[in-house]
Amino acid sequence: MKKRKIEKIKISPMPKTWILDLDGTLVVHDGPYILGRDEFLPGAREFLESIPRRDMIIFLTARSDYEKPHTIRFLKENNIRYDHIIFNAGEGERIMINDMKPDGLVTAYAVNTKRDRFCRTEFVVDDSMGTIYD
Image 1 (tube, one colour):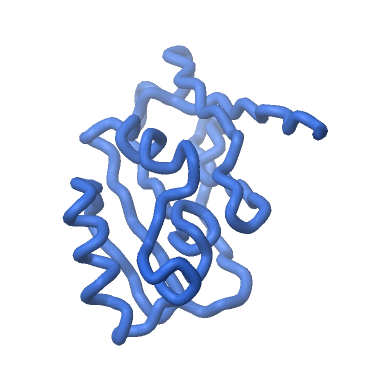
Image 2 (image 1 turned 135 degrees about the horizontal axis):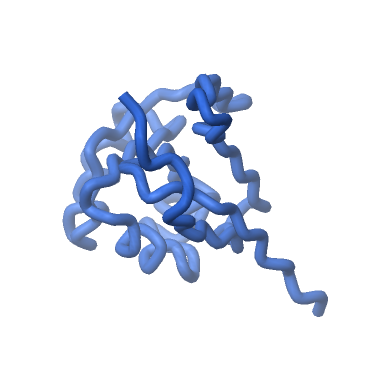
């Protein structure tokens, strides 16, 4: 079996907004229908717990309003912190557009993973990046 390479992305120490898909990214895709419940992908829960409290977490999902109660219950039962959750998102591409800081600090990243494999990207804080902005 080929070992997957870990990509490293340098990020600033500034507060961040994490926009994360649920199905196939953090939890097993269609878990409630296949397994009868939601289940975290290996490493996903630990990743969520590692996000600093000052950062904002937004979950984005194509799940319908019908799936909303059990999704929120699953997150609550597992003590998963988040600030917002958006249901009924389109099933196609998710497109993020943001401006760079005046010194060139990149302020948007996209990481695509294979379905049902938690990302192997390591986000490394670089204290020399993006510390003075108005």
